[in-house]
Length: 258
Image 1 (tube, rainbow, N blue to C red):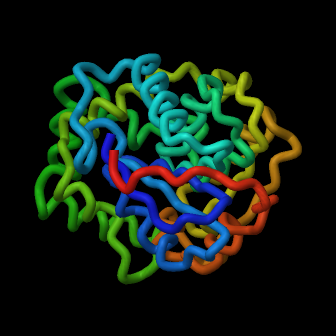
Image 2: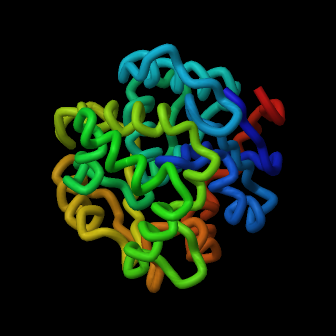
Image 3: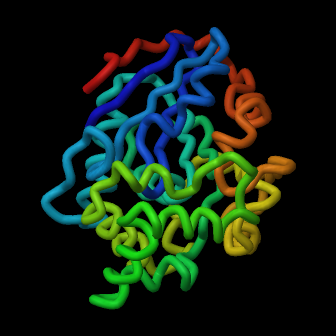
């Protein structure tokens, strides 16, 4: 997988982007990276500069993510999963040999709501997806329709102009096939929940479901932000993600790309 590293501090954050995104999703955080941290972000399979897998199989992709993270060679990592990237982090976490110091779920859905699930349903779903995301007018209308879920000036559909639409649908179908949030009960890493004040109602309802699994998980609301927390509240999010956590451990540096 293609990946990029910012910084060379001892506290390592691995970023997994959301649906339609890429490693560039984390650039606003990278601009605020303190000296004691390093930020590693990848293009998930089928996005950005990482080729699509032969098939979107949950076990194969989660095992591949775990191999990539372990292969970075760090002594321990914090996983930061954004939107559907949070589910990718949860899928990979139980397979990791590398200890996870924190698992931050940013605007994470605990279930696939109907307005996303519909895109995974056969011919009609493919047509609906094409209308909403695969053409400029559809993206503009969808972004306008989501104005209440984002801050003015942000674009919730712009990344889909560069997306491989076969891959975006493949990821959506993979996530829709997850039995439910109980599937992630085996995850033992310390979980933290962060979401935007103006995000989707389904994300807010998901917080209670996640806390059924991890009752001790702290919850932080990004005031004034919508679903695009990294772009809309990078300073506040940076204070959460880059909070010093035992930065005394010396860790090796990953290569800039792999």
